[in-house]
View 1 (cartoon, each protein chain N blue to C red):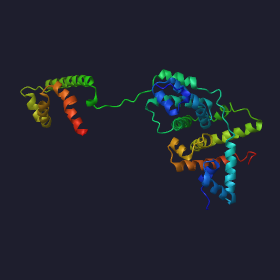
View 2: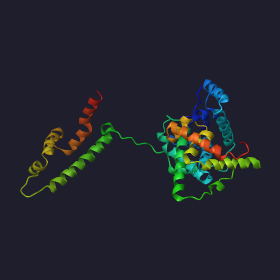
View 3: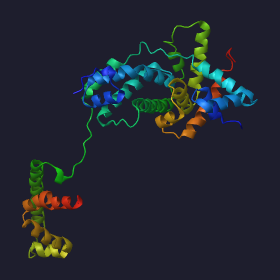
View 4: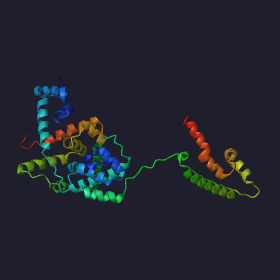
Length: 168
Length: 185
């Protein structure tokens, strides 16, 4: 048997080897002029290190830990994001209303901001944002043109269809 | 609802209870592991005040994360990992503040009652460990005193297994040199 690595000899001294592996290594070490002194000195070091016992009496921190933990309150719970179409119906309804209000407000602001003398808002939009205007036609079809309808469609009907499709 | 007393439950069961706000379960975890945690932290830091702070913070982190704890690794492995990380933070602070090297004197108290010879030997060992580079000190403390295998040390520290083995070989060689003046050699 060729000489084992120093790592293996450390494992031998630490008692991490068992059975045949341990026996084979011990047999090699007993007759190896290189490994025997290494293991002997390592064993002495190992035994010497073991004499350092640490007495933790007088260092009890349990009360401090418990007091701090109580001040911090209950363990934090991980908040997991849930897709809107999986929210409970009352939550979806409330979210729809808020979304519709936001869209309505935003639309109103855009309309007032885009008012220029002699230019109808839609003409101006076509010049500036042709793709959005085309999209607007589709959205009108879905929702009947009302922000509330759009929001409700978004959060309920259309995505329920999507959910059915994705769930096969 | 679990009606077992806290001290018959496994660490994983206690952690689940802690995640549900059971402070008695948290107290039991502290009771079980505090002494080992303190001894490990003290051996790494050589200062009782810092060891106590590390252990307190470690258990508070356990408490904060209890609701998301998954028992994929042993609780002790997780706790050791937190302690080692906190000790490494302490090492970094020491380096940046250039703390005076009087922590060895500060840490001499509270060894079990010993003869003068035993006391000298213990002190020599303590100083030899404290003189090791930080990674070697961590590896030796976890290996020799906490009984962790090479694989477990790798899991706790995040080092590769070969890095752990290399660290241990160098550390024991250094310790052999440091302790060669003692009568046993």
